[in-house]
Image (cartoon, rainbow, N blue to C red; front, side, top):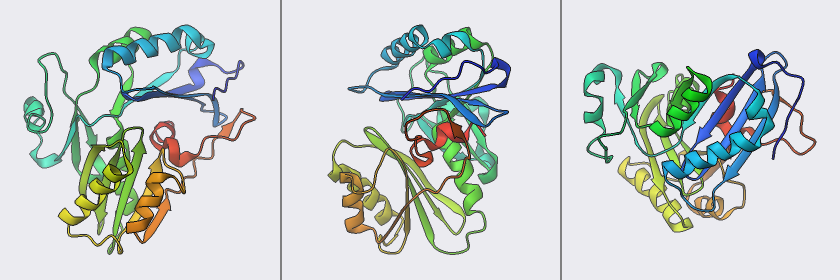
Length: 276
């Protein structure tokens, strides 16, 4: 789906770009109008490597007139499993790679970045794709970039800060896997990303995490977002084990130019959230 507007000034445009090895998403907001003036979402037929993803990005900048002519404020989001959350009081920036080396293969050429999640007093240490960051820097100069899990953890901590009982499990589904964040009594217990290609893998990781955290699937609240729909295979198998399932409620209030049905907020939550 692509939506464009020809009568919008670049200085008023904010563009969010979500990058993963499974696909790309672009969303541009006219800030004065709160109107989405460009939206494009594409999935790759297979998981690519960062060099191949860059080729896909370059192709979009050659083909899409909106991307060619506009010079917006830019936020790039990276969606990958190359991250680790650390309590802020234990974080030492000069030793950032040390927090990653036990669960992530780090190459000499990798750059280690970090996002401060102030609402939870946590730092997310992660590896962005340097070649892709270099492309956007050459294109736009200075720009903001974050990890998708940072956006989720920041917002969900705010939503749960007054939670005094119960457990909420957030599952952000994407092609080939999902991000899982667990909150109990207002505290983040777990944030992890799992790769899966079958419904059995999908439910295994969810139930395994519940078991490790001593959670009863019939008692916690499972909140779904991302690329998952009601009565899909993943939804149906989760429904067999988890008593309470709901989709994340969103209220961005954006207007859309498209005559087609607008994309649902819960399906592209991080992409829309950073535009606020």
